[in-house]
Length: 264
Picture (cartoon, rainbow, N blue to C red):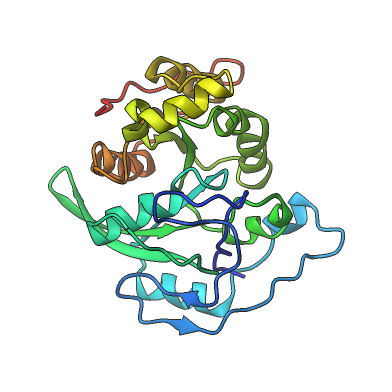
């Protein structure tokens, strides 16, 4: 159970990075050397957040963490089709995935230099589908930092951060810090995307709205990026590292967002 179940909430395809249906493979991360046939998920009966939080790691997760004692675990959550998988693949492989087959499991291990020091960062993708709300938290144990993602051109995913994702993380891992990430900023000026939003009587989420939400939910900070152009992408994972070693304490009733430099 230490692994992550792939797939996304919603069935939409996003710019060559399709998300939605169960993939036909078990995907290991870059350099992981792991591979398995796909497994059929079964939801636990009567599962509760508290019970899921106490679930032990499986053998592979324990072995992985023993082999990389200093590896930091970063889990990415958020609605489907907001670009979580593209975010990870673009960063780990230094290239945007033009063609992507949805997989059951995604894990990447990357070495990142922050402040002149190298860190091993384990990046974990998660399923955003509502059908896996009870299954997804099995991937949360031993997480050092969460990245809560929403698409700046998907207002529903923005609202779901506060309505769904923050409550889930607080119920499962209340003491783990999280960073709010606005994705797909390259689509803010895309004519087709803007036309779609206008038709729905909506607008792209602004940077100021992202900062406001980060303060409201007690996030460490708010950052924006594009997996396609890689603008702001490195800053996202640099901040993940900094958050682990220097988390901002959240005071009850006074959620303040740490000042961050967002590259937009």
